[in-house]
Length: 168
Image 1 (cartoon, one colour):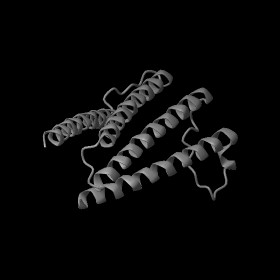
Image 2 (image 1 turned 90 degrees about the vertical axis):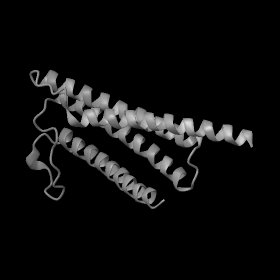
Image 3 (image 1 turned 180 degrees about the vertical axis):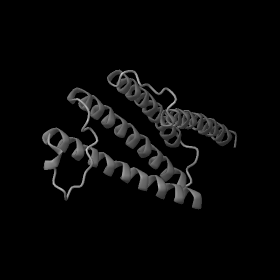
Image 4 (image 1 turned 45 degrees about the vertical axis):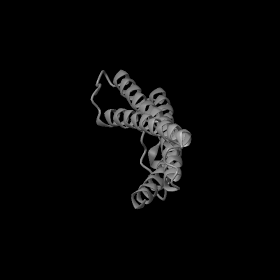
């Protein structure tokens, strides 16, 4: 159970850091849209402009894709956090654990598709410079499939446990 505690801490820290990064993205994008001259950005904020050299249409599309990516990753981590809470209390084979793993897998697969869509959009606006083998995209697909597989394993364990409970 010590491993689950460590994993809960790591996932929680990453979850809250992702939320803070999302807030920083919102602030940075708002400043970038409102202030076209980057020299007028207050030095105390010290925020890098992520979208300075992009056209306005591309900025908006990339901002929407970034929001979608953050939402999907936050939802995936939220489901993993729920699952780890159940596992830490000893309820290993439950429908909640199975559904949390399954949802996390779906969210990571969606994150892979959002990353793929982002690459297509950047290639469209950037003269066809497309990278199909982006490591983060492949990692999202692998993690998503792993969580889907894990949900099937836990579902099988849940079914076996229910059968065992009925035979006794």
